[in-house]
Image (cartoon, rainbow, N blue to C red):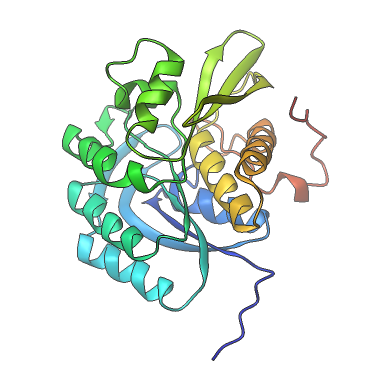
Length: 274
């Protein structure tokens, strides 16, 4: 039997392929590698997208999605899983079947349910399947405020949104951008007992894409390092803020976060978590 190198935790990412490198699989690979883990990327859809616009999206067949994931899970000791964009109900059902077979893996779910460039990421059927099949198996769900409101359609406050999401069965919810003003952004962490902690961050006056992907992937990486969830959430936000603060203008659209900012000798020190 092979002797595993446990000093390098394995994180599985299930997400889309974005050729601009702003979001999706490349964002997850860079984030996870930057935090000392090995990423096993499972492609859910192929995108034709630049830094400004999503032009086309082609889903991967659910059977291939299952094969991609299971060959890795049977070969490598995956400690955490980050789930990003899912293109159809069949993919949600496929991932549900996989998670049921591997209940000890930490699952960070980024519930992408908004629009990009006029193209719908998901349908209402996909969102309903995600709520029924994946939320109950998630260790942490990381919606921004709009995504949280799309899931918790009956809620009238941020706290009510979080508690309605928790009713689906997930263990924790981190609502990002729960309160915004000109100088700061607030994120809120909840568990079944209610609000656990609030985080205040300096607002960055830059337009970059990929915050949710970095946040969910970085938290998954810290969980793979065996941090407590509350510590993984704090460290994940800190990493995300720094990656965004060092974003670079590489195309004609939005800036691309620098997930390897710490390796840039010319990068200045950013502001730490409060």
